[in-house]
Length: 229
Image 1 (cartoon, rainbow, N blue to C red):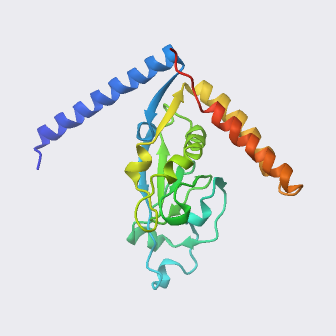
Image 2: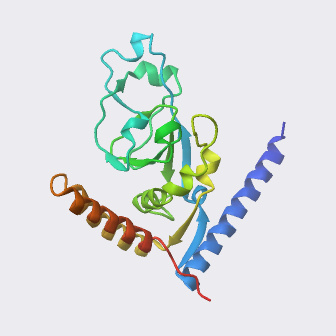
Image 3: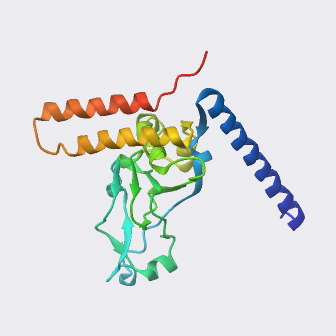
């Protein structure tokens, strides 16, 4: 076990390394317009939730705390849920509150790799990796679009019989990071495409599919940055 002095020194060194890396990222953004970073570098806090014991009615009956499950995570903004737990469940299990505007990534089975943003404060089950984004360096919605764009890469990394992901596999995903002004421009454009695509709930299937493919094409182009030769 580290002594208090050694622990303090270790923390100081970690802080210095983080400060140096942030300065490096800002320099790369200034020179090249963007920097490649691990997803972990834009995350302030991470964690997963839990499934309170289903046989304990005190955890569910008359619950009013939103409880997000992986079936709620489907490349979307989560504004409401069908499942709720009680304050007792929060106090006695690992199903803890997360603030709104986290990027939630499903990590288990068929849903692994899908992502969402919670627009309400909520709790989640253990099959969700919840990422609170560091708004000092990245916009949560920009990170969400980057994770969405990395879906094929993520599902190629699935492991085990069920095809699961883990936090390390997800957090080591490399994303391009322009400055926040440029991130905002990209988010505005993709939000418009997302709204347009989402509004086409009815119509000719071929037209809907064509519009979705167009959206995916432009999302990929907007999130691909050309390096200077």
